[in-house]
Length: 307
Image 1 (cartoon, helix red, strand yellow):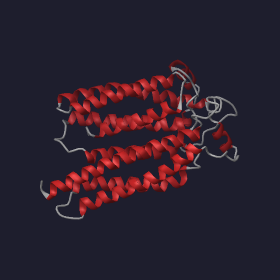
Image 2 (cartoon, rainbow, N blue to C red):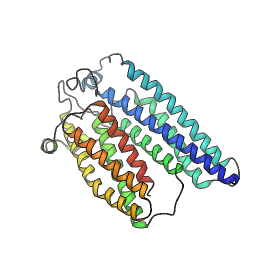
Image 3 (cartoon, helix red, strand yellow):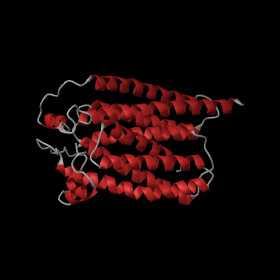
Image 4 (tube, rainbow, N blue to C red):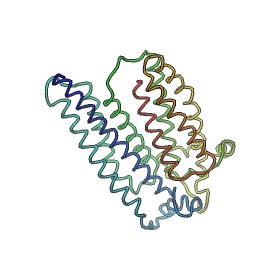
């Protein structure tokens, strides 16, 4: 193996380590975010949203449980580790000739995202506008996707039609993730139950409730944010729109000689649909919500490999 091949091999191993680290960061972030929103509280689901009501009223929050404190500390440690790995990736790409410019561009994008999330973290803890949570969510998912793109050996570019469909799927999935973050951050997870219930409730909700810079108006009792029925409905509709696009991409990837990516898309889609249907029935345990978040991150990372 030549020196250039060894550099590329080391770079890919580092990128895999970065992807695993970022996946841990996004999962811990989801645990903290969902716990703060009220999922998994002792009196679930009656207690869901109480923290948001207290914060909106300016009241003092109760002490965090031990699990959340440990998760917050682990999140910071893993985030610093991810940043250090990204710096090393850049050094590997540009420290000697020949420069790995293509890989270096991805590494620089990773650094920009890591610094953006580090700055954003300053406001994340006490933020009550959903935009902060949405930016954290999408930024973490984007870092995971770019890390995986850097870790996997580049192949011949797919046909233009497939790439266009992959870009459309990525954008649609990002929109669904953003709306899902809005649901979580605005305490709207239990605003409605079932498809027909959400569709009927959403008709009476103004579009202004989708403004991520608008602090949600919470009531004193459940459902704490009935206006969240609109974001819930949109989140579910985008999921339905994604299904045929992802199936098309899986078929094209299979025919294009990329069976592993095709199998990953099918498996992740099936798992996400099952998790989504279970959540739509009104049963929303913290573990299932975390799984839903994890599957979305993996699905986005897989899609980016087809762009």
